[in-house]
Image (cartoon, rainbow, N blue to C red):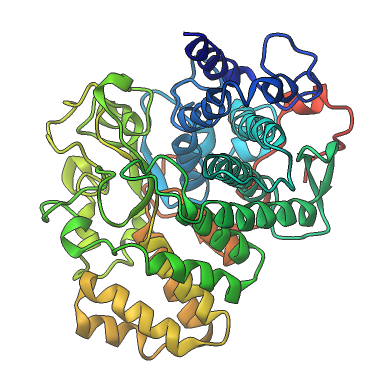
Length: 493
């Protein structure tokens, strides 16, 4: 009973942990600090397990930061903000206004917007709890002996790296290791002032490299919501690519390609066999969440914003559609073109993301699953990395193999074979945007490829306008609350 009580306290407390002196210095008696946990960790290992489970739950928690805002539901909320900011996801109808400021690109340029605050608090809370766990098992340089201790430390480091990776992508305009960008807390360093991006990237690489070693041999079974070695490898591939270290990125991407089966042509779009990105047991999914009825997810969820077959904003008038200019670049023979609707559901993802019951507005308690990472991302990233590492033959082979199930062998070869140089890179970037539409990865690809994006005609706001990857509108702002409470923050990036 005592273990259960302490475990419950930890799960509740972690939701209130923030980026602040009180938590890091142990002055707040309302939360369990690293020092408190360390004292009891041997007798009550559920304390550490509870912290990790708390992060896992927080990543999909409705109202997790604000307690009441309908676009506050963890990582998938950030995914929508990123997809909408880079323009591949069009707000094509607005009835309730939740995404108006993001679609109008007000949020990225106005530090008073609450979206900036939600993103900031979300990731720094994860960092705070991860730091607590890491400290409790011996610190950054700990070398645990038991399998459980290795797993706990490996998962905590992976979570910390995940959070810092996204903060770097969102709050820095472009990769510059010398630029001071974010406050930094890694147990050994506690800086309220912004530190150089290179210091944080070094921590992310170190954390993920260590996590991969610590999680070697660990099996999560069918629980894909838990971080294992392959999830850490995925984030390391993305991190290396963001840093321009493409040979290293390709190594990590290829590790995943050998570990998972690619999404089949039938799975890509309804009515194919096993179609719909709604089942965590799909063989290509690396990281995702099995939403079950007992979790009670309803409107305040990614599905509550995207899927017209769910009781959702998408059904009620806040339509999220593929940018029509991007859609026009999908081959007519491409099965992915059928992912998007026509008529009254024009360009909405009704055949990619859908409740299997397929009754308009029908799913109330959400049991369709959430995707965070799949192997097809790394097929594309491996090809991109090969092309950027002077290995165009390998990149072409991968792209032809990738496109063949989507457009047929003849068209795949005819599309890719003549390309070289920037034209090949442009095609890989285009295919990345098409393949991963709605999955929160187009923004990362835009930054990585230093692209300029031009919006089509089906946006409620800013239709037809173009934005470079490093423009003011393409990155987020350190929020007002941090500026007010942290006297060592001196302006935006």
